[in-house]
Amino acid sequence: MTNEERVEERLIHAYERGYYKKVMSRVNEMQKINPKINRYKLYDIICDEYKNEWLKENDNGITEHSPD
Picture: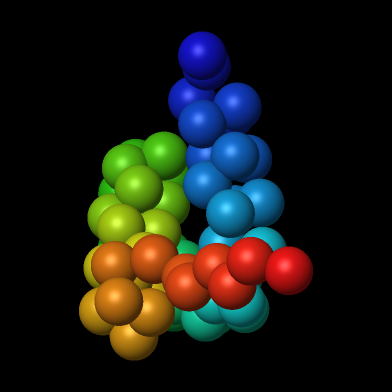
């Protein structure tokens, strides 16, 4: 998997989980502060940060399933 594919997949997950806008905002903010930072690494760091926050808010991503 290429870096582009990995970042794309992580952004799709961020969108599905509802924190895509937060990720993009933070990425833009960090790129302004440090424009030479590796973008792939930056996306990984920020996606990890918001994913961990999302997991804490959602009981580690576990959702209850009620049988029909």
